[in-house]
Length: 376
Image 1 (cartoon, rainbow, N blue to C red):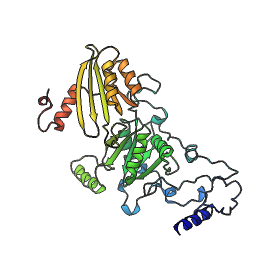
Image 2: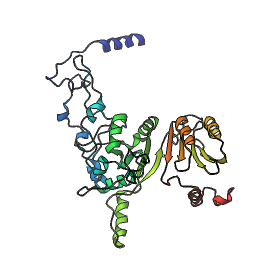
Image 3: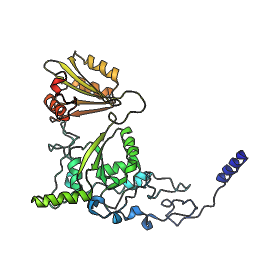
Image 4: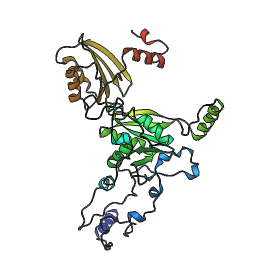
């Protein structure tokens, strides 16, 4: 009986349904609803996504009963509110991403149209630092308090896709929104600057997908509630200080191919490399992300980076980070060729021994003992 019912169900699915003729010129922009009727054209859609305005107006102070809802579905799945081209015989299918990006560009902010790093170098400069960006408003340009927070974070993490927490959603802006629309199939919000988002419950899914594609993801969280912001501003007023108009936010986690949670029980390493070129000494630190085990070491390096080559072959690191100011060209070329994700830090951003010792001491990583007492 079960087999017969399955055959009947399959046969019903194979029966061709009658096709309605769409209005002239609209057959490529209409989709079929479950009942077979044509969906509403884009200009007449009344879904919640079309009512959402750009969140850069800062939703922190909006009462919960009047908060706006992003057009991404609350279940965490990619939004279906965007119109999909019908698969008809007389009109080829158009990719959904192409429909949105044809009319979407970054906003007219000067620092987005003329991108530079923190030192003012353009992308063509051989010393251009892709991890930073120069955020400087031109005369007449203004940002909302929430967007000021966003760009203060983005300027120091320009090579990351920033998931910016706003209420119960993570939101993406400008170039990150274009990427989220293209790679994650997120629907755009509003009709002006690129902007999209998704519910907080969908964070693991979307972060893992971007990391698997080779992107870095920075997750920005709200560190206080609107009620806590109000209480903090009362104290600031009493002290004669300027009040804050947006809740405090900070970047709380960075997900890369090396730092993302490993799949299975296999070890997953992040490798840090620096060299003392005058003495030809190689310094390494590798971290097992699965267990949190940290290993440090140094040794004399031979010509051709043979020891580094052997270490990379043994560890097979998921990510490598090296000091661009004190690493030889041979070591850099080796890592960039052997490791899929390799980051080169410059402009003194690698830190160094003094910085590392101070961070270890202040963080209490050695159970109350100073870093110097843990083996020097």
